[in-house]
Picture 1 (cartoon, rainbow, N blue to C red):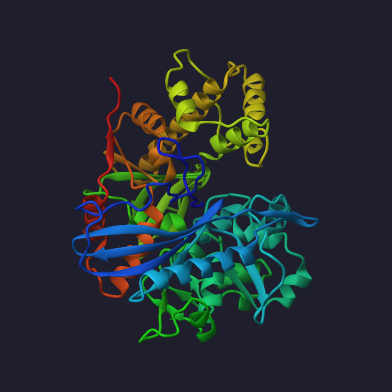
Picture 2 (cartoon, rainbow, N blue to C red; picture 1 turned 45 degrees about the vertical axis):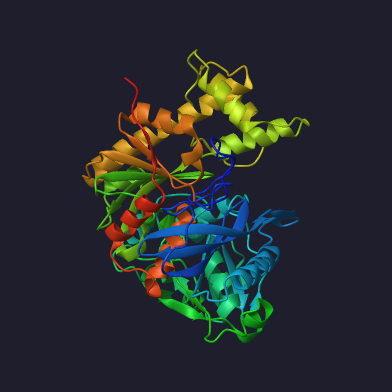
Length: 509
């Protein structure tokens, strides 16, 4: 669901779909030598941090250069948990100013972020800071929405899995007077794009995560919107990845030092749902692959030409989300490295410094069997003492309780690998797609133990990397839009594979 910055090599502490770590400036062929082509800027916002990256792209390769990194820390107020969106935007502008300073020939800018969260606007003004998807208000909206339209009907219309964090349920929790005041709903990347250009647009891959886009037509489902009693005027015109959102507003261009450029700087729509960009950048050389976009959340699935909206897929809680070039991302949201990062945060609150590579090495050395727990249990969703919750789950299910930090970590990674294996087997069964290779991209691709356990439990080879899949997908879509490269998804993925060769893990035994 979301992409975030990953932790140290071998770790991947924080997550999302795309993620990236210290090695984010992945070298192009030639160890960072100059590339023919041009340069674009990717704004990549994750649920714990954000960054601005320069992407040097041409027919001979891709190179990323980090320009700015900044935290994305939510704020709890009396009415709930919110994103500090103005601070996030200020950091975006600072990062863009540095990008323009370094590369005055910048050809384009694009924004990706996590899904489902939004701002309501009246005119140019936000009606409050956007809520965080982990705020507990989301549960209140489920009953209201399902009272109006049963979930089976929602699924047939949108093809979207049941998650209480989905935009449609968040809207069910909104006070009616706020909805009546608003004249637009903008998801996070669309909001940033609006502030940059003054143009209100809804990018399709991210709109597909709202639960309000028709899975067959890929348009806003007016019948569903009306049945839910939502104002139709809230939902802006849709835009495809590769189209131009608009040009930088003069005041924005002046602020970031782009006013002197010889031509207006465009903001380009890309797969603005971070997972859409991450999957676009999977370095697959054949079509028989599955993907795991691994970070805070793990997005586990296959890429299809057409959605699967069967009773079986609904019962299995599989989702059909939009991909670049009209593809369908048929997947399950599985809890991810959130479990590990929250455990580390819990241990660090005692004043200790946790060395994650050492902790992972200790976890790899655990010889005794550890508990394999249900990572999707509701008790693991909210922030808090994750080791204590894991221990409670184990006691409740007569499983061995981890007695050391290494055992906790090993239990988390074994449980994630088992969840991945189960989801991929179901994806293959429901879609009919043959899977011969698994690609893990994002922060989790740095976690060698997780990659090996996934290979072992699935019995399939795992190709790990790139870490910065989301940023790579972002810059590649821009680069094709402005003419720096050309080709279909297969050609672009071949360019990724050549520029960022993945690490291969074979199943044991």
